[in-house]
Length: 314
Image (cartoon, rainbow, N blue to C red; front, side, top):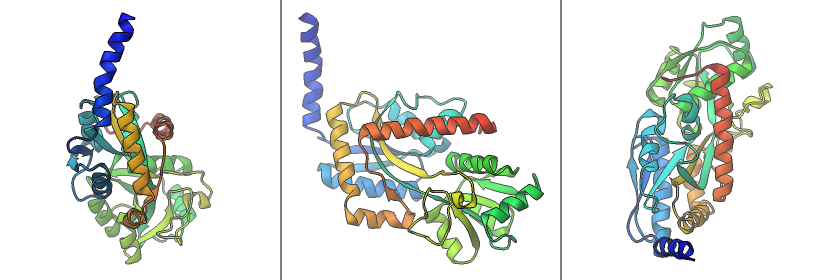
């Protein structure tokens, strides 16, 4: 009975805090600098959550190491609902791509809700003499090691490594610090392949500066339905960029449920869908359990890619 009383005494303050949540502004940590596509999406979500929660949800940018710095800040934050993480695909990839990550990718976070996912475009210079992905693969096979690809982040790096592995081609990686310099190099013909987000890449494709060979999603994107999927070229390949909300481990379940409820509601809002559309983001409403299962599957998928390809950034 004594131990039961101690348990109740410990639970009552947590339950009270959850019932009054939020009582102050909420910090949303983003693992990339202001102005980029991830930051833009986070600010859309933060603005909508602010209205729904009745307290400001403000974005804090912690760029660096493909989100590892931001993830570490959230993992070490108090589990009270006042620090949440706008995570993206790199969160699951970094667990195996980096030799040392200062937190446990699964155990140190509570899944709140998935937000959405968007495809990458597989693009080549407009001047490259190929008209589709099959022709590019044939060219790369004929010239092993002679072509280069630009990699801008851990998700695009591993997505390209997975593609080259499945296609059976050898293409040399050239690292870039962002999508803009990678696209500039691609347009100049300094690299012959770049996988990058559809929202970033599509304007250059429509202007004729780049040639889109495929999108990396399971289905064609509504943003550019004329571009085929990688799978249509015969490869069983999918590699999208996803976004979602996480909290520090041991955040009270009532707080997780409140944030999940409001996140799912905002994804049903036609105005939010309209804001997400230019980035090619498709809403992914989920329960915390569904999002947790999704992340575990992503961790396993990319760990195998790292093991099979020997990819590393260290």
